[in-house]
Length: 383
Image 1 (spheres, rainbow, N blue to C red):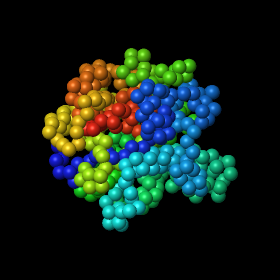
Image 2: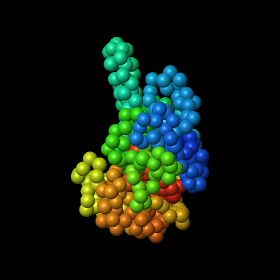
Image 3: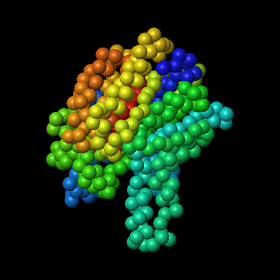
Image 4: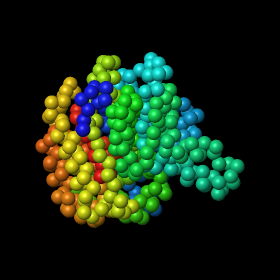
């Protein structure tokens, strides 16, 4: 049930993004609204011999603009992208961590999740070992590959000494980040949580493995139309990279420092199919359970202020299926994702970040960042 106590209500006050359609949040949002695609022929390596030659890559991002050059060389791309998005989110929020006391920074947490972490460090380290021998493997290979290193470096950047967490849950990863941030605020453990996810899986091994699984779209001749969730001709998702970070803080903390809330995180639900490593459970029960929990959050929306509600509708709750034919069967069984979205469309305060048809971001909140981020009242759900 959503909280009424301002010190236990979680609001978003800053936004940051490094995405295939924009290396900062304003550019990303403008292109998203305009329908600009981030799916292109792969540029980061020669994919000419690959069955799948398209992906959504971040272009022209220089990690040395957001990190020390030496540290940037030692770390991996998901960390670079996460640092860029985090710095923008902190600046956008107007929060001054440097002005905080040590005790105040003890109440600032970091939750930055990732599905794959620094996968390239494993690949590169193995190649070096095999070609040159163990003495030549980088001493920084293990820190660089660790999924938790992204959140750790963010905490070190601003000397944030509250909880520092990373969870790995494939394409549900960043939805869980919001769930954890909400709990940290609601339980009173934190006043502020730097929250989100970062992913950089566009490497030869990753593309080849997912293509061999039959999960990726093979529309190499038409990359701009390859990502087509809910479409009868969908042949898979598009692998992508990027980072999205937000500053979440208690409403009381935000108002005390004069910040303007952008959105409120009302609640969430986590469920598991416990069925298969990639295919959804055929009855769609997990989706029904999550929808029920979201309805419960929706029931408590009216009359909650001072953060107002926008008239603009949110994106609806959807379910996941890596492989088109299996996923579509579940969509049909639960009444269709469009029908689910339609139910939410008539309840403008309610939204859910879903997982079907991961259009661009493997670990960044399912189908990539949605318009939920711009709405004032959102609940999150995960099936």
